[in-house]
Image 1 (cartoon, rainbow, N blue to C red):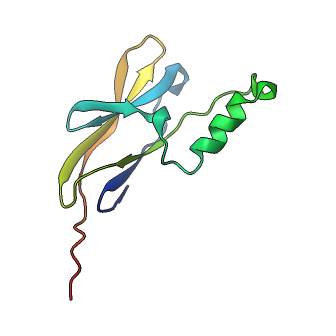
Image 2 (cartoon, rainbow, N blue to C red; image 1 turned 60 degrees about the vertical axis):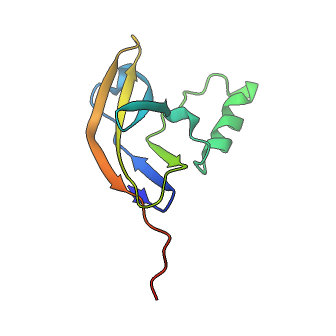
Image 3 (spheres, rainbow, N blue to C red; image 1 turned 30 degrees about the vertical axis):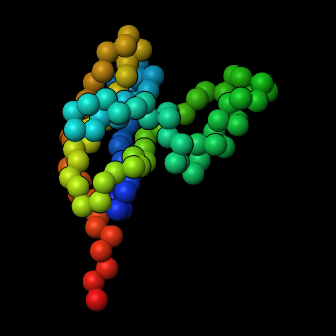
Length: 110
């Protein structure tokens, strides 16, 4: 977990029974935020998308993202984030505990 003035990086471990997981959903303050595969701020995301879009890699097994950068957060604000695994049958299972974070203030101390 990393927290800045306007973003938080969430990281989680692959849960037991991961064979049935097709993705992860990110929740902010109990409300669905996005699918973890929409991680445009991840440094590796553009490389992964390029790799998977190449027809010669069509048989490659896709990796599951186990981190997500939440951006656009307010400064000095508290948020509760949780991650849910999306199973192949469409059901969701909570992954780990919810985490409470408070973003940093941009005020500089003199």
